Amino acid sequence: MLYFLATLALVSRVYSEMMTIVFLPKTPIWALLCFIFLSLFAAWYGIKTVLRTSVIISVLFIPWIFAALISSMSNFDIRNASPIWNTNFDFFKHPAYYSSFFAFSGFLFLGMIHPYFRNVARSRKVFILLMAGLFPLYLASVYIPLLIFGQETVIQFQFPLHTGMDTIDMSWSIFERMTLFYTTSMIAFLIVYSSVLIWILAEMFRSIVVPLSNRWLSVIITIIAYFLSFLIPDWYETEHLIWLDTGLRAYSIFVFPVVIGIIGALQRRRVN
Image 1 (cartoon, rainbow, N blue to C red):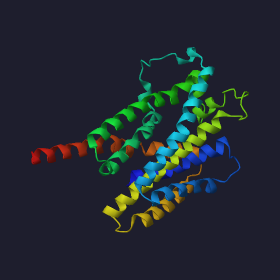
Image 2 (image 1 turned 180 degrees about the vertical axis):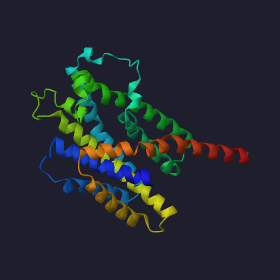
Image 3 (image 1 turned 45 degrees about the vertical axis):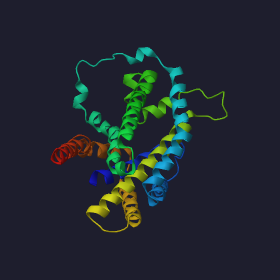
Image 4 (image 1 turned 90 degrees about the horizontal axis):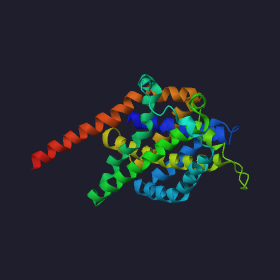
């Protein structure tokens, strides 16, 4: 519960920072953080509503994400990819490498929505296929800015992928920046992800701590997350908190699923 609450607060702060940098530089953070209440609106009606919303948003925004990623290829310089292989493996010493676990923790919600699927075997195959489909996107988020700017330059950027999108020539279009499409798409998905986190936290609090209805727990959790996000002073502190959260995130990603798998295996052995 602590990990999910920290993730909800950090995600809210991340997309508010993205909106500030890309297209709302003069809007106060407290106003941008109000987008979390859009997530509450979806979580209020349950996980089935959230899942239907995610399908609609995927149909609307995934084409824009792929269009932005493909358009950036025109600015690639293949020489910036070298050295391709790091023989020193010194990246293991940097906390930022381990904080990238943040991108892999989204699968944890699958354990919460498992009862909503009738054909479990088929659903498992679909989830594995979708997770494998994310791998090229992880590579793109790293190598697109790297191939455009080079290693020495890209490490200086706060949002390297967004900066790479700004290099795309949009003179042929009525729109000025491809970054607007990409950022809007990412914010839409982050809002859906936040609604999933709110629903998970409400379910866990109701089952373990407070026997209240999910809707009122969702309201309380959203308000708590809003104020936690507002207390974060800037982006640098956000990155620092992501680093501090690495240990809890690694436990949630690696240890928790292994323990659940062992418990499930022991229960199946007893039944058989």
